[in-house]
Image (tube, rainbow, N blue to C red):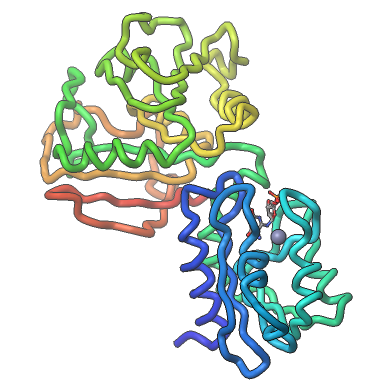
Length: 337
Ligand code: AOF
Ligand code: ZN
């Protein structure tokens, strides 16, 4: 059973999601305003990067002083800085709200809305549906906190977790429908990350406007399909710092962030995926599982290179969604760090 506050916060999160894929690198935010009698008088959300914040979107719709003495719900601490727009705290104070209910504090160092609202005599409650609010803005939070892109690794496996036979054949494990789904997914990310191994073995086009290839020894031929479209950043041992004689992937991701890449979709084989997983560089995994069994231990796995002897040393994930795509299964999970 949800409390009244949780019910309205859930509504804010739903509203916030209307801005999905349109607000980056800013957060998704939704807002609900109740009058002093508890009736909803307005709602709003952050539609698109650079446009009005959710609170402003909701409050500007009010005609008179309907919010006077009322309650404002918002899944993220209201801002108190001049950015694309003036501070939301000013508008909240102007509208004489009595209570402000917040999902999570803002990690943005420019924002200090809570103390400003409190100083203005407004009652503030923080942490309503905290987990849900954090999950909603997990990309924004990672970007802000670590100055690193959010990385989702996609893999397509058989039921026994294999991505190809021992000689590298992988066409096709998953169905056409799943592959179409992958094409759509790519457009939700700022960059596709892949390796020279994958480009050489599969010669994919990976249609996208920005792609990054990890190609330590400049092995990828300029005639490869991947060069047919989009901007390409090639990380080699000549332009990337090395770590244990290998490309420093963390340094590459940080370089991508500086180029304005906030989300990365990694599509690669077990070597790169395994190395990234080991270094805690993967935030989420999208695993397509086809109803097929390779039945051969020598077939290649999605993640490779970790010589462990105990199950207690595995990487652990938390599944947050699973659904059927045609006859395949798509499992989305967060990598627990
Ligand atoms: C948003 N939308 O609904 C809220 C935000 O400088 P600006 O104007 O782009 O402000 C961005 C910051 O404002 C953002 O990083 C976050 O900390 C805060 N809140 N931002 O884009 C919103 N509420
Ligand atoms: Zn704001």
